Length: 504
Image 1 (cartoon, rainbow, N blue to C red):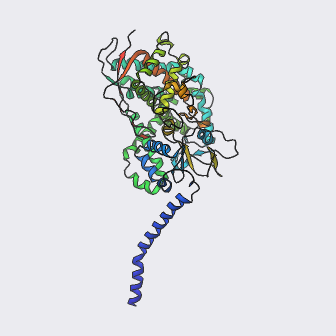
Image 2: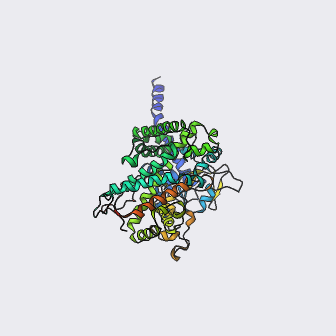
Image 3: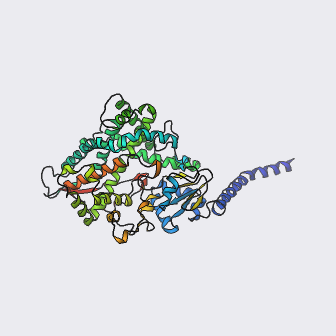
């Protein structure tokens, strides 16, 4: 009897070790399969990225995924396997193949559902294709060229207030200051774009330009976006996500909740009043489409507008201001073009969109400092599809790595240099072969950014008004400002400049 007991006890003691060994062998087999037998095995990339999604997750969580993507494309070329089932592209054809209208009989590339949090009410960014089409038809009235003309005076009012506040901030209110104090342009641009979008979305400003400080809700937005980005990638790897989630501060989740609640309260307040003032809801109501969207969808989209229509515009303005200040010849050329207009009243939609060098500077700023620098992933449809001439199996996550694409010698000559001239209708010969069609900062296809025209108008009007009024230079201690981390949006430091009222 004791022999039997000893035997069984001996066997039982080996069970945990046996299970552990089997798990190790199973995991090893998965790694071997992904590297040598997986349908994506023919695509170039580091073997460790093919074997596991953890390297990609690490770079996302540390805010360095844009640098990782650029390094991999520099080494492996225009298509890189950056995860077991992830492909990254920098070829311009990828935009059309992934996000354009498909005429090859295959289904469309949907947004990666593994990265999307479950929603009670869909917004225009995360909705499925049919819901997106319905919502886009509804909101298109509020972002049309006709609407932009109506909104111009509202936007103009906030830009004038910005200039007035910067005169005060710079110590040059009403006179030329020989040694002006520094002004943080990140704050000033954020105040302006958030006040504009709040008025268009909620029918009331946030008062940040007037008061000269962030309201708590805007501070919450930055944490909210970071939470959404980190949370989306943790959902892809549930086991490691549960471990990593321990290290994500609860404050990020609280900021997300506060952001959502603030938008809900402001939408409710706006809809109580029957106002026809050219804002988003009056334009939607005027088109008789307000009955085709639920109150929950209104809340969800208001939250989106207050992120997508604000921080991104302020980001580009900040980056472009830095780039111009670093390139005195480019700055002087742009200032000369803007000040060639007869008077400040000529800084309007029609005139500014006709200034070639201003528009070239905007494009070059978007290339070197895209507000959305990384991949917005899509998933290959049932049966797979062809991207850039190569077959992609169904379920593969794909997308264009914008930061890597825009700074690659594969697409641009002198890719790290600030050269607005490359975007002119007749560029210098050195830049004539640049693959300019790769630049799609507002995305591409039927789901491209609805607010593109509004963003361009704000960018032109704010930058032109600044350079019409002031001579702008960097504060001496400001250097390497573009060296930033990204969590969906750039993690920006203050951008200190000196502003001197122009001499007539």
